[in-house]
Length: 496
Image 1 (cartoon, rainbow, N blue to C red):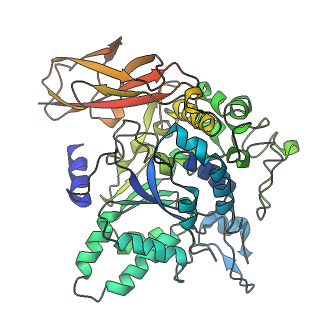
Image 2 (tube, rainbow, N blue to C red; image 1 turned 180 degrees about the horizontal axis):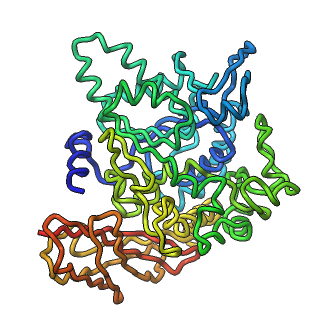
Image 3 (spheres, helix red, strand yellow; image 1 turned 180 degrees about the vertical axis):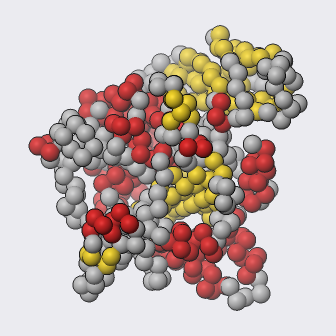
């Protein structure tokens, strides 16, 4: 654990490791699938939690515009090569849907701003919309408006990291990096520039949706920190019914989604796609989910009207939301964006998979998806609160509690030592806060029991604990508002 934290400090640079209380810079690249649309809506509702610096159309193995010349294209990715064969274009939703969502955001922005600070203006967000590399899957030969925008951000004077979210392929990001390489690789200060950009760019990618990371980024920019989510995102995606614990599924079903989130919550959420809602995305013939006659015995199961469809890309921005878990600089800690472990091949790449599995508390089995699914009830309740923010004044809405631990977030202790943690909570709506505590065994190197009595947590470090072992304890503060909201504090105890 210490080795990973030290490595993160070293390659981010000591002046670039920052508190999650500072808004993180981020750029979104997206291929426009319906789950990107739904992800984008949720992302806008959290736009006060990070500093959006680019909204870029890109392509993927599932979606591309074509070159308008009738050129036939065959996917480089085995699955889509077999599924689609040669195509001139594929399920392309166009380059206006972001602007349409921002028009909806504009209508709810005044009310959102009454409920929280830092929401960006619609005009500012509209200025960030750029078209990147969209002609074909993996196309990165063209210099585009979107790639040049990313390039400029990576080269600017601001030393803070930029989180590059890849909701589709990484090709527009790859083009930006290639343009930097082309412009500076023969200059005397190339190594200095390359090191700066490598420290600054952080990629969070949902799957490999083209081959540009494998063929270019990973080879030419191996020190770019990358979070690779290939499994855990599925808890937010089309097969969610097969992934989410049964106790959490009601928060994704039509009864909850319609009453708490989708209906009567303003113009932006009116644009959200759900099962059987009668909507159809232009350009994508495979979007049949809105047809109420086709939601039973579908590819992913039996669904009811207004059931959740997919937001497969939401973990990418949820990684940036500060909820008290300190996961942003420590991807191995786990949080709303999932939990990742350091690659055995590249120390700058963090991956999910069997090595990042958590013990599913319902099945009592190790579960590759549980690092994501364990948080889903709180995530959905939090979304329901922000849906209310779209239409309700502050006094009629709920807002998350703020909690802290008097002893701090990092404690050193000896084997056998008894520790008491005193929790302090404040709620902006004067709601009552209920506290609980648990040991996140997989995030540390060891585990032990922790009990909560009111505002005091008690734990005992085992006598068998060895020097250097770490115990991660999660303190949850859950308010009794409606919807009920949760925030956290992580306390790490290191054995000395």
